[in-house]
Length: 331
Image (cartoon, rainbow, N blue to C red; front, top):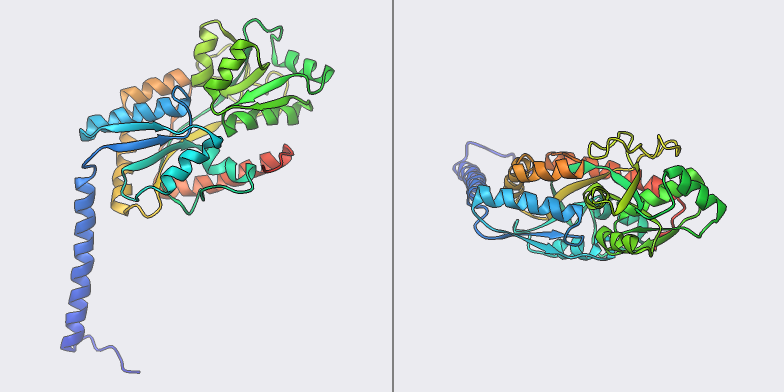
């Protein structure tokens, strides 16, 4: 085998060509990032209009439009626990113009809840950034006889399977399943396409309770239509400071939050992903996003693409353990 002679004219030309190509690719990537976005961006949201994810997507989109002067279109594709939206983005062109604004439902929980997914939460996506974290609130109809978490647990123990809880996301469902597991009670689960739809039935008396994201539940509580019984994380909500955590209310060890994040289709150019990360980071600090976080009782949370990938991996393991402990069989 002949040795590589860097001094030969042909080798020097090859090396020079390689360096030139690398430089041109670098310049192309820089140019691409500088030119992006050159048209409207679509945010695909896995839940219905009015949901927490939808509200945050609109706030982020407003900020990006202000920064780039390009419109951001919100496309709500609710249903199938976010799988319809996730699949749509997974199959979209990898050019940075179709993004998924989602939660732990599609990217940590679903692979443990369903035997077959229509998308791969790791291979089909390029992580962009975390967006926010929050907790959930346990609510009942304002006319309900239940005044505390203890009342619900006592009623469920007295009549196993008679009470029902609704959920329109994996976070909401798992919050209810964790309540059943830690309190040792049997409560019927009623699935919905989104939390706002479950809230409608809760207001109408079709279900007994639910544990929902604060941006969906708190306005109804403050309007006097729902009664808040407990908060899902170990720290009380700033929006409902007088409402105890579910752990404080007697279900020891209870802790179930949720998170939002942005993803692009796999194969999206790194320069575009980097530009999106920059735009998302700035957007979480915007007035519109701050208003959402304050109203929702949640907080901004940003990451690098690599940090989001590692966080997602850890969350997937965590959710798998919770789902297994709850005894839920994959559908």
